[in-house]
Image 1: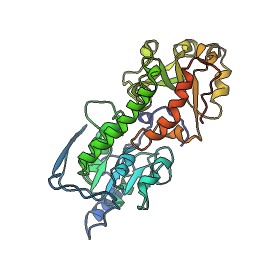
Image 2: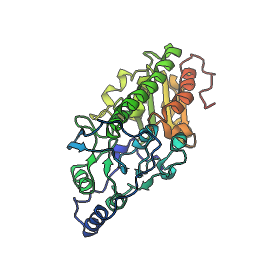
Image 3: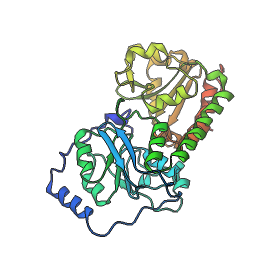
Image 4: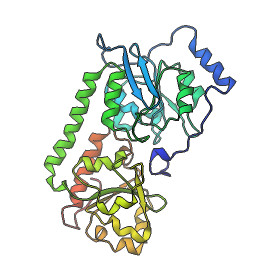
Length: 352
């Protein structure tokens, strides 16, 4: 998928009224009867006794799950990684960042020999008929922007868990995604251990690089100007999880939802930080060098830029922050951030 938007919440989703089309009604009815579907492949252990029923609160109410789901369809954008890490495979997942069957390279080992999920194309909105055709017994959209109409329509197909209440869409943390799926799948203890082990990777990186603490760092992209990701976005949280801070100079540009904001070209000095990570394509660096004001900044002369360019596996990984992608992100990005803040402009911040 070409990087045409800075964050998933900006994607325009076509809203289809709840169960409005006769074709959808027929599909839902067809999937609701007959012999039960075969369960999805699952490499994990069965849920422990007493794991159900479980109630999951979300933006549109509470969904009660009475038994371990066997056919989970994901309409959020990145939940498949946490499911795979917990030993379960969804029967359907969303197409985000163009991975075959929605499974990125860092998740292939966790998938193993299991049947990969069916890929659902959300370019024109949630494909309700395709979701229904998979005969799900549960639909999950945690890292999503489901509307009330989306939720009502999906709930007519199968019980549905939407994004969390009380926070902006597309802001659920990887920790909460993992823990919520752990409850849904009856694997709460396994999910807690997975979160603890993954958080330990950040702790180790910070211990190895105390120079990160309190230094200013921003993740940016060229989108309608100079767009930066705030702490409300998983990309921004990656840097703060390593000890970096978002500089106060950017506070006035951050949107109300906390995702980030656009710095006007004449104010680009606000991006003169200790480490500036660019989510880039092949033309980004040339475009930046053509901007005389940006090129005059210390972030350039001091060697503080890190270009994470399309084609590098980590480029997609930093927009897909999960327990499976985080090891790749840290292995690739931490040494480059260290080079950016070491005070020597000659130190390369390119990928190893």
